[in-house]
Length: 98
Image (tube, rainbow, N blue to C red; front, top):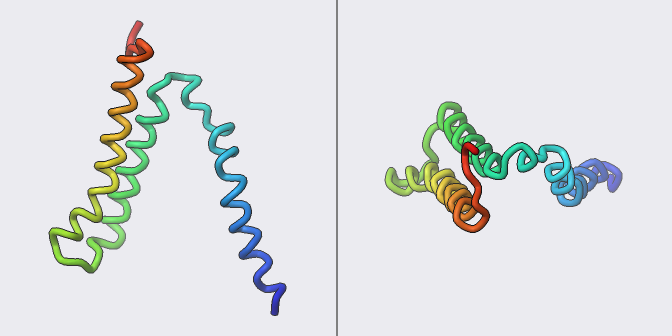
């Protein structure tokens, strides 16, 4: 019976310790452009939000709370990404076109 938990713990270990290095080394979007990680994060989070809405609808909360739960996460990620892009422009002189 204890061996049946081995795959579960292996997956947990893998997700905790291998995902970070895989993402940092696998994508390297900042090598293409410094703002690309922030922009792709925004696109991905909004795509996931729209897909989850299409598949399951609003969560079972009161209407205003459900809307905040669904769109609050992607909106906060978008705000942080645009703050990061603004920071790159002000502190590091990053431009969209040179």
